[in-house]
Image 1: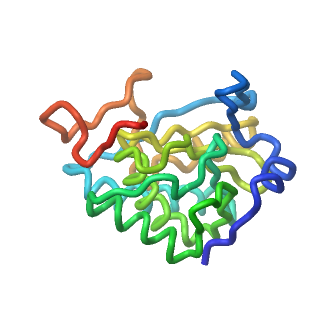
Image 2 (image 1 turned 135 degrees about the vertical axis):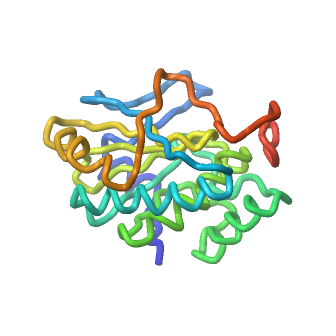
Length: 201
């Protein structure tokens, strides 16, 4: 079960969590040690969503982190928008089933065993623009920061040498590959645009 944490508590306890206040032109992202762009050789967005979560869960476990905390960088609630697109609607239903309310904008603490299913749903929320904040995950010891972009690339940041050594020791075992360059894209997509994605308003 997901544990909800207030936004205030998360920002006080996990001081390396990124945050933004665009209306005040204030932004924070911690100093990182290294940044990596991870992907998988998937044949479809649906398959990618499933295996992305499974593989990230395996990597986090191998690195020895028992839990991750996820929170959006802005104050917008998780359920600020809805979607009629089936995978995104299922993701919204998943959050509602975990007792998120329309106004909740805090953090979600997940046991590592829950990361796989969460990332699957988070991918669809991000891909379809149903969640409007950039959602970042951090371990309790604040060694890594991860987030999933709309193209299904995991942006994996290490914050110190120990975490970086652990990452480089274990990242290949689940089957992750490095994305070449800093441009993310959906390799299985033949047409421009992303199916189910709405414009932010």
